[in-house]
Amino acid sequence: MVFKLPKKEVMISSEIGKEVIKKELPLIPKLPGIYRMLNDKGEILYVGKAKNLPNRLKSYVAEKNHIIRTDRMLAQTRKLEITTTSNESEALLLEANLIKKYKPKFNILLRDDKSFPFIFIGNKDKWPQIKRHRGKKTKEGFYFGPFASAGSANWTIKMIQKIFHLRVCDDSVFKNRERPCILYQIKRCSGPCVGYVKKDEYKKTVNDAIEFVSGKSRKIQKSLSDQMEKASNDLDFEKAVILRDRIKSLNIIQSSQRINEANLIEADVIGGYKESGKTCIQVFFYRSKQNWGNQAFFPKHDPDEKLSEILNSFISQFYENKNVPSSIILSEEIKEKILIEKTLTKKENKQINISIAKKRIKIKSS
Image 1 (cartoon, one colour):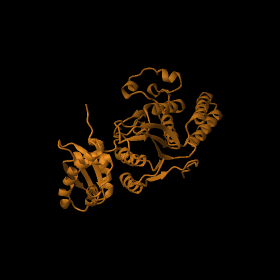
Image 2 (image 1 turned 90 degrees about the vertical axis):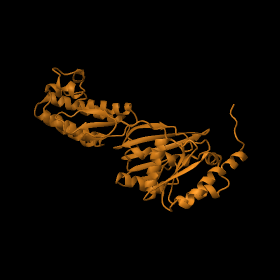
Image 3 (image 1 turned 180 degrees about the vertical axis):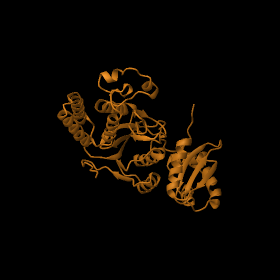
């Protein structure tokens, strides 16, 4: 049987943590940084950041009416550790890193243990391959993503195969083929493994595929039309038919493709909903004016935590180890919008804008 301390007893026991903080305060420099509260077993209970460490920690001592979660944390605190940083942005990044690493019980926790898939097209190979990729981008080439799931990435690869007939087979299979595979028979590959397409022609098709995934489908459509007309004038009707089929596939894909009405070129749209003490956060990935899928997250947090606080912490942790798009659109305001915007801009070495979506208004991106 589990017995819970009445609120009054919790409040009294929280004085233990306050005494720990009081003893350390004179030794803490007035600098930005992060602080860690530990229990009697040396386990990290909470990681926080501050622009001025002493000022932030004094609030734990001075305030008398903490929320119950804070009182419980202070009741278990037996040790305080700090790490100073050069600025508040560094503190934000370090805080997110330590939260993801140690998963303190009193922090809002993002359960994000998977990397998102990308599409990779090599540009140094003689016969470039298109494939799904996860992990570090060590190989030279073009990476497109992130996609919300393997299914979203696979769908795009199939569309590219259908239009551009690029190979998807591994190098070992490619080098040892004596006749084309079934993908050639169903017009999903041009058969470079057995020399059914010239190197220059295949390279041109690869470049067209790269531009297509980059959102330049209209340019590709015009290029294919010009090629078809030339092939027809040259009486190369077999090639003209192949190009005609590619244009037809492109038209079908364009009509069904998830082109977003808001015209978002490069953006993540993040929305949260909280009910009965639990929260779902959805992230929609928009790249090259296309919706590349969405992913749901269920962060761990105290039932009384406000949605704005959950979103604020989610964003810091989510982008700690991911590439950040130029635009992040949120469902509601967060208190550290300016700081996060500044930190991500410095991290990515490009301007990052965080905006709040307006209901019933379509967001237009230049």
